[in-house]
Amino acid sequence: MKLGYIIFYVQDVTATVAFYEKALGLKRRFVHETGTYAEMETGTTALAFVEEGAAKEHGFTVRPLRPKEEAAAVEVALVTEDVAGAYAHAVEAGAEATQAPKQKPWGQTVAYVRDLNGVLVELCTPMGG
Image (tube, rainbow, N blue to C red):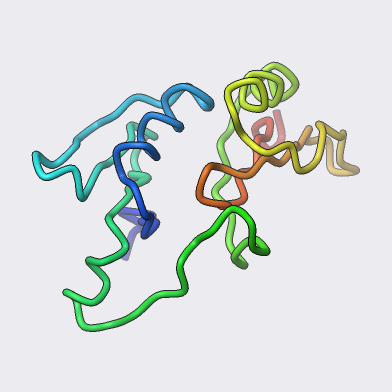
């Protein structure tokens, strides 16, 4: 097995793609012509978004992601050499400031923001870097 995709079920795929481009500097890899599915360019494993109604089409339900509710028990980590700059840019572009950059005991610098859906996004330096 290998990890191929991380997929978030969201209310608005188009707005989510625009947010990740503007606030976090990711590039779109693929957007379906219907606007109900998209992938961001993140290396080997794709970060993808699908319209939350698709869950029912697949035969299951999901707890919707909402910015005003507690964050889901999951985060997506984006690695960068400039955590402070990425954090400042993300917050300026509309991300919710959750935790300013901090040096961790193991040597990593880590910060947290929430995206427009309420997803927790970790911004961190590479491990062992």
